[in-house]
Structures are given as structure tokens and as C-alpha cells.
Length: 109
Image (cartoon, rainbow, N blue to C red; front, side, top):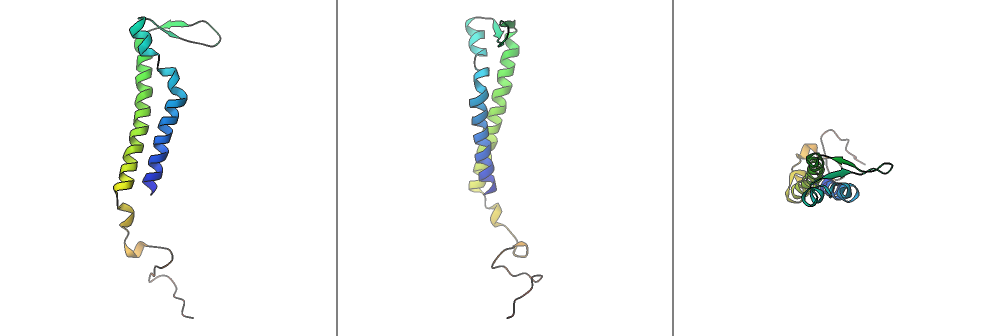
């Protein structure tokens, strides 16, 4: 169950990061292919011309991080859905109602 929750969280985080910050990284390939020059845009000053390879490298690193988040989430989901690791508990390690250990006091009322 833990892996399923972790997988859902990682996958959601990957799509959330892509949705919030992805807009800033999608124009590098288009600018490079169509115009041959790339610009970095600022709010308070005019755009500055930059090297397209740096902008494409930033885009590649960003999408690699997003793919890693989503991939880790999917792997965790598969492991959680497929695994029986949480059922492999030794009887002496079990705690909770319905379990009796030699160490626990017995209620003889």
C-alpha cells in the first residue's frame, strides 16, 4: 500500500511540475528550428539573444527530471500492485489485535 501511495504522489508531482513550469521550456526547439536564433525573455527589459544549445540543454534537463518523476511513480505503482512484500511478515513480528506474542501479557479474567 505504501508503494501505491508513493507512486500516486510521484506521478502527480511529475504532471504538476510539467503543467506549472513546462510552458517556459517548450519554445526552445521551435525557435531553433524555425528562426535559428533563440532569445531569453525578461519582464523588465527587452529580450536578449542567447545560444540555442544552452536553451535546448535546459529544456532537455527539465523534461528529464519530469520523466524521472513520472517513471519513478509508475515503477512504484507497479511494485505496489504486483508485490506481496507487505504480506511477508514473520508471525513473531506481527503486532496489533488478534496477535499473541510470548512477550505480551495475557488477560486471564
